[in-house]
Image (tube, rainbow, N blue to C red; front, side, top):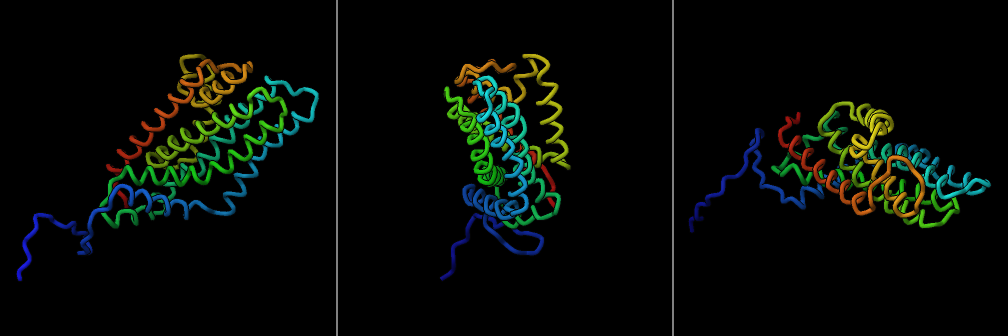
Length: 260
């Protein structure tokens, strides 16, 4: 019996191998597993954990001193945890999630089957979040608890840290797709833009993600921190919206990029 002809045209690669398309969920899982395996280096994890411990140590030091007030504790969490630990850890994992694959020419293995680009970005970002979240949450939230000031600081720190993890992971995943030397550009963003330029006034401050994490602390604890004027709702919604835009831009760039 002769098989009926089909209207579907298989995708043919230069090697002559025919492959069917990969569904979005499957593509995201493939990307997630590949990035997780690539970035799960014991040396990298230990180094970032030691860096993050500075937030814990600082919280403990403040807690055992006679100067532990809500304002001082919030300042330690915001200026060390949110300004250094969270963005740097996210930069190393998220920036390298696709950036490292592209630079060492292994990203081509994700092109063995035709697949949409957005699941690759989503999978890479989720893998980065999987690695960064335990390190950051354990150290920054513990540091807030060790200050001993109470007044909702621990809960506010937990929420702000989660928001920071999501938005910085999305931003630095996008950065790794768009730019070479993503670590250098990411550090410039953290230190120069968020650490200096964005503090120049309310107009520029709204474009710095640390403004939103600080605002959560201020809104929920009443601490006195400069440059933190948003409500908790706005401080959650705006970074989440930025995260979506970053993923869209990374996906668009990846779909228009030649991979060797």
